[in-house]
Image (tube, rainbow, N blue to C red; front, top):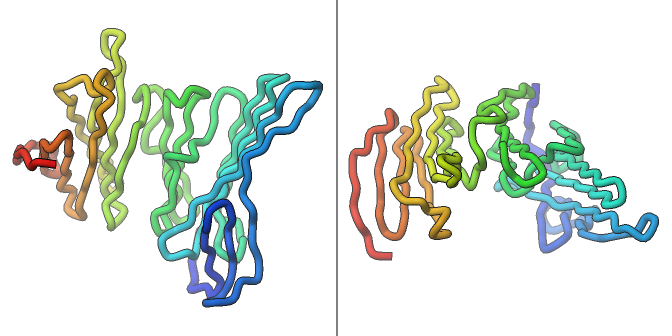
Length: 233
């Protein structure tokens, strides 16, 4: 079980460096990097990246190593307190990898997404109170493009892709993390063909807003479209 106390130590990120300190004093730092070395004249890529929680009490450290000679990819995501206590760690190798871009910290709830090497066939799970729960299983979606979480950490709204007749079609997926109730909405336009972004919002009552080129679609918690209006961008 993860129990978070008020910590006097905070972590801040500036560029490629994490700084650890109290108020105006810094007593430690961690330099992030992306480098390449060589083994038998073939490159080995090393990556270390991080994300910091809004209250600066927790940080996510992402590490990746790709060995071209042996075609091996290893990745690891570790969640730490600002005092560098490990809260959770997940490592992947070869056919699967952790996603730095899609994994994140939401207060004491952690979201981890892993994919295949090409960023497809995602699996999404959450870590809460030291327990791991799978929310989206492998094989459900072709890709997760983006997602938002309500401020109360209950409702998850995702922009996903599913292959239909050899085309990737955009779907909106809603998940109530408390009741596990879900709904889906197939977007009526192949946005993947147009390379157009969808913007997502969701409130603490599960009311969802999907914005595409000034078109605002509003959905109830049950997945009913309750409003559609155009607001110039």
